Length: 286
Ligand SMILES: [Mn+2]
Image 1 (cartoon, rainbow, N blue to C red):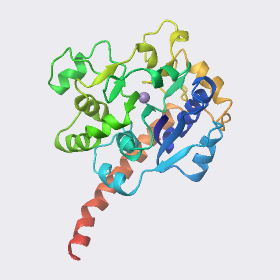
Image 2 (cartoon, helix red, strand yellow; image 1 turned 120 degrees about the vertical axis):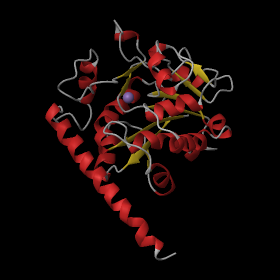
Image 3 (tube, helix red, strand yellow; image 1 turned 180 degrees about the horizontal axis):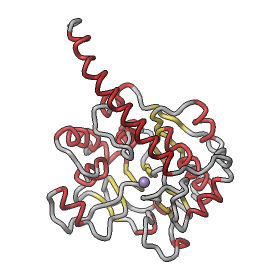
Image 4 (spheres, protein in one colour; image 1 turned 120 degrees about the horizontal axis):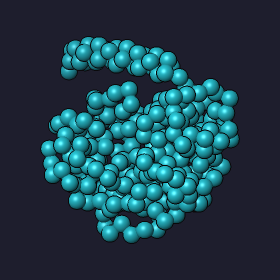
């Protein structure tokens, strides 16, 4: 079995703390850990490795995957790495039976063993649904009561995923139409009627009175490595963070975030600019 995560440099710190929590509380010492890396530097990888005893398996986003995702829409919070994870089951085909995908902004609080033992009834995906799926279904123009899941904790039967060509269908859909919640929307549409509903404690997002009931905490809004975050589980995050190489790094501020958004928009403009000129260079050679 596999636990996987997909990140760029910006999420390395969160992923590091998540990996520490997985080692400490996850109760699945035999699980192999895969990190899909979009531009991580050797120093980032070394720091991530310090968070866990298990050897991390890094898969760099390059070549075929990169060419498939580089044209898809990204934003400051939906990076290429969020798409790259949709390709993991293809990459891991034939090697493993089941994959638990965890967002970097999660913390493992209890044993994950039940997720690897539960029956998936032949379905490709299991995830925690939203209590009220209305707003998501509205933008997807489909039945308002249809179950809609959060994709930050995703249990995947790798063979079933590949047998139904989820990756291929998802890539085609992302090219064909636009989605408000991008990769999460597209996963929900691809998995319509084909997923198992997990109990809330596997992806405890908000509205919990007592997080001691949660098996996996998911920081969906302010991230716990920021000053503005007031999440009740931020203290747990900071306690775990002290066991990682990020222990001395200061928490991020709103100012840091504004700078990052600005840099991303400059980079995007540059990418668009250079992409506009590239075809003319190659067409001469044809
Ligand atoms: Mn998340």
